[in-house]
Length: 119
Ligand SMILES: [Zn+2]
Image (cartoon, rainbow, N blue to C red; front, side, top):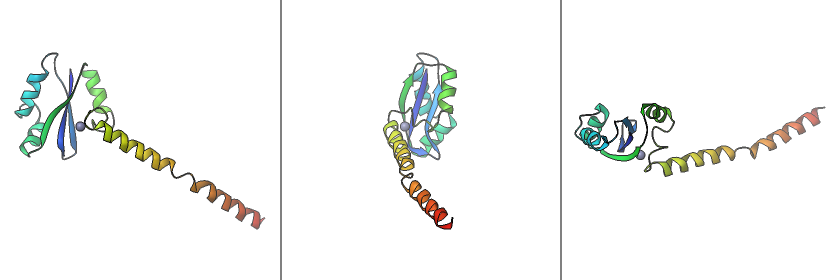
């Protein structure tokens, strides 16, 4: 099983912890995390007063765990709590990129005019 811990607010650069545990062992694993016994990162986050919550549990093996860890967004794209904001942010970035072209053609026209007047 794959589990995703959501850290609120993010601890340093870590907003999530993606981990793997054997089937049926997730609750014990999370309990260990919350006691600071499973991951130095989660231990430190809790010690610094950050809230750590189980955000997601997925059927999967270590190969899936590696894939999720490699995926962009540092867990934001799979965490149900962060996904809406992550997707909205990505849409905003995409929209701002699409917003640039209108100034492009004008510049080309101006260049054409210059070339015409020079020729
Ligand atoms: Zn999250």
